Length: 392
Image 1 (tube, rainbow, N blue to C red):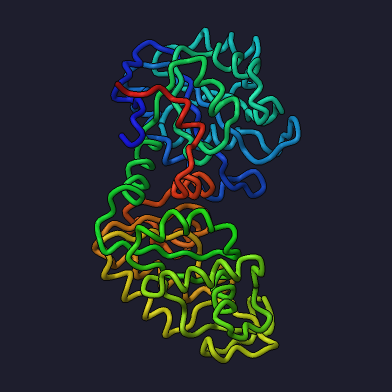
Image 2 (image 1 turned 90 degrees about the vertical axis):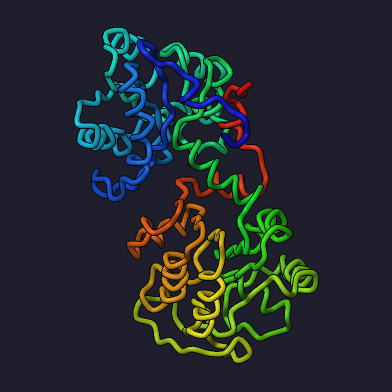
């Protein structure tokens, strides 16, 4: 696999206690899970270990609790997992300690146990060695399958891997294979679409990808910093003033690669019932704010996307959460769905967008990691993966 780490194919888990770090940080509403995709993505690894006859001990965080918080218990996750696996998943009262150790000691091969939210302990995020040792005491082997937290050096993602033999789970393996192709050997034409609000948040990503791509399509809030760098009026649109010079330098160095919108949907209000109009990028009124790419830009973007062999999308091109400004992001998603090449959605808001438009299953890969996929694509080392055992 990418990065030369041991994987489940290197592990005979029969009879072993296997601690699996998953990413069950799912959205909740009144205690109900509203999107269980992250849970579903973990099933391949869990199912593989059950089949091998392992005692499967799952660990995850949920939300940002400050100490024990009953609203952020993993009970809804245990219930959903029980349904998906068609077998009971036992939620333990804590993630470390005597009661937990006792329950695990009674478990049989094929059993699945879920530790309570690891972030109920502040030592988790502090990557406290003593806390990591308590977690490691529960198992014989560690499997990291939580790509969404692989960029965090926490006790359950990184600390444990220095104590127990650490392997990459099937989800991490899949993420690295798909994202690895983008940074090492993409089929061409290779097109990247970048949105989001601020240019400065994407500088490392742009610097790593721009020399490699054939075209870079820019939308979202980033657009207006680039338009400002061209000397255009941007009205009340979002501006990352600290990045104007950077944007200008990119436009000068890569004029053939960068494709900016030619028209925009502007409005005098940031709301779902706003009055909108379509204007050229040369005619943005001083009292209006750009909130989406316009119809001509959608056609131009779609043409480039559909003719690509590899497409990477990171960041929506408009405020897709509001109906009047969802058209551009929907057009990008639909063009990717029609593209015959490899289409990769880099997690975060882009993943939420393809889910919203019902097109996630039309993509080659939708990453489960927002921050983790961004850092990987920037060329950074992810501590949760670096700590796993190297393959020979």
